[in-house]
Length: 166
Image (cartoon, rainbow, N blue to C red):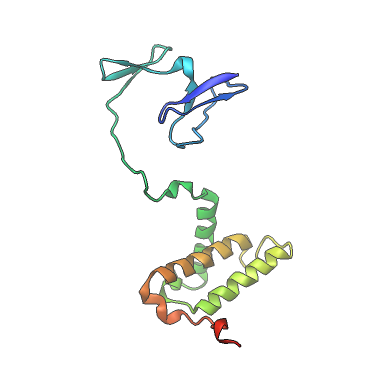
């Protein structure tokens, strides 16, 4: 077992094998790299860090206090890319930012349901766009999220009130 420590938050863990060339990011802070404990840097006069390898690095690193802030770095890049592909397809088919003009909630919900149904039936790729149904679903969900957070889109909320059915 090899003992490792995060060079950012200090988290310690053990792994069965570790190749010195491997880069393993800390599963706690996601910012630091795990390095063998015996290779931990030591302070030199509060200004430089020296490693067992003899390398030194400036220790006057800035501090960024971002505890409690939105962790946008946790959004999978594939999701962001997929939504971008769908928006690009839509920009070419309609116009860039066409969705920002407002679309009735019922139309967006219907599109979400169609893409979800296609996925349930085992179809991954939308025939018209050649893009994943999951990407279309995520993009349409993003439209609704935007609309629901901004008063300007209240007029497009035409959802049927099933609560009124008796």
